[in-house]
Image (cartoon, rainbow, N blue to C red):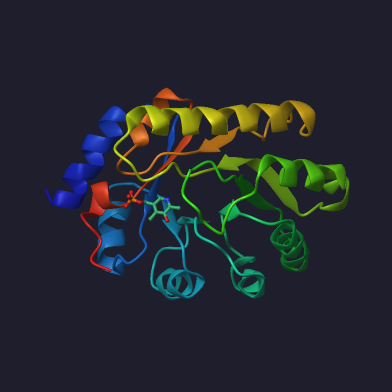
Length: 223
Ligand SMILES: *Cc1c(COP(=O)(O)O)cnc(C)c1O
């Protein structure tokens, strides 16, 4: 067995069946992705549209692709016809663009709202006030070609387990607030995408329903 298959099986052994595993394949070759595909895996995450498009052309069509990195509005049209989920919706403008391109493609696109939970300064992710403002604009009534399925977040890159746990717990609370206040307990609003190679067990303890794992499956990234 290859190291990819070995690592994959080891991770499958500890991730509960109720938690979805997104194999983060950014920077990985088509051959590496095919190895995991042959093991039966179907959900892959990429952060760059161009890279995703070129890989998709050379891989089986039943792969469910997730976008997990910052997405520029002018790139949405390329992925709208096929994307399985956009996990990294980080602005109202982007959400509106996704809705419009999904409409043109005759699809409903599943989205997660990326929420900024880490202490680190990054440009991406909503704050809760921004999310509240967006929902007050009646997006559930006006954006008919998207399905908001939950939230996504990244914890601070630190060895401090308590800090990571409290950031994940904060994301779970955001999820619960949004579900109750704005989603009317809609059954499809159910995903909390949190946890990467270094912190996925903590994320699962804090209620993650979707983990995004790259280097633990494929090995350290070179670029
Ligand atoms: C790269 C990336 C991951 C996976 O990171 P690993 O540490 O390799 O598991 C998960 N989520 C996002 C948003 C990423 O960009």
